[in-house]
Length: 308
Image (cartoon, rainbow, N blue to C red; front, side, top):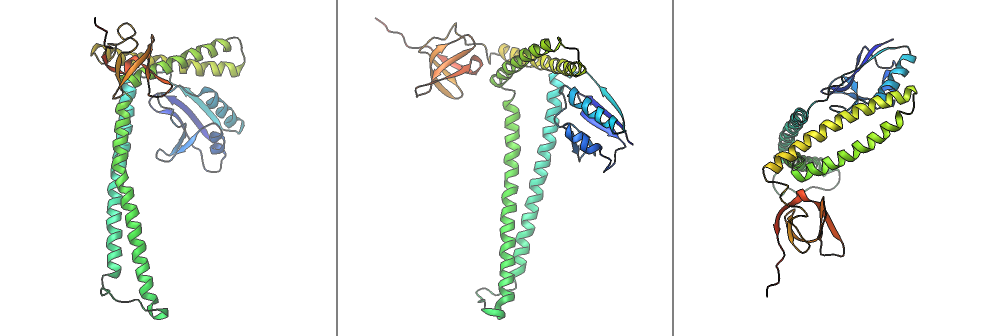
């Protein structure tokens, strides 16, 4: 029987260590509770568990079933919640690693495409231009050679096309990372996280009415999730305060924008239909309106006033 340790920390996520072996049944049990084999690390773990609260219920159920199967299992939790700056730096480093891998893959595919083109050319370079392909058995070797050369050339074209996609994927990754820190995106993320926090608080209040073991585990999981949410909200709010101090947001509100004014949102000037406390409704050119948070407004033009 195996001796297994299931541990969770913000930096490493949820990982499984121990002397498990193929066919001993541990893998089947772990997979049932959301664990996956990380080939690059050579161990089981929970995907996307870094800088998130531990999934206590799933972890404890997996540990119970492993113990029932005769294994010795230890479960440890590190309740530290890393600050947003540390989390963003770690995410950036992982993204840079992926971008470097994509760049290397593109270079490898380019070399493969060049090699395939060269192989295709080498197959037929000894054939005189314009040499006819004889019918029947007499021209079979010639036809086969031409067919293999064409297949190599097609394979080279597909490989080159795949290589050309790699720089675009790297650029898209950089754009997505930059966009996630734009004030408008951060503000919407704060609103979503605050909604999640209120919902979580309601679920926690309901759980306190029960004393079962399962409820205790779930409550601990919720407490971890709450701590993470509170830190993420605080970090993003700090980003918004910095943007406000820099004059990037907070200049416009229902106090200085009126119906009929023009506001610049996402590269377009739109007419204001209604100014609310948190949002501004603007025309779309159709029968409906669009709503945006005030952080999306980049410029403002008051509606012309009648004179005389």
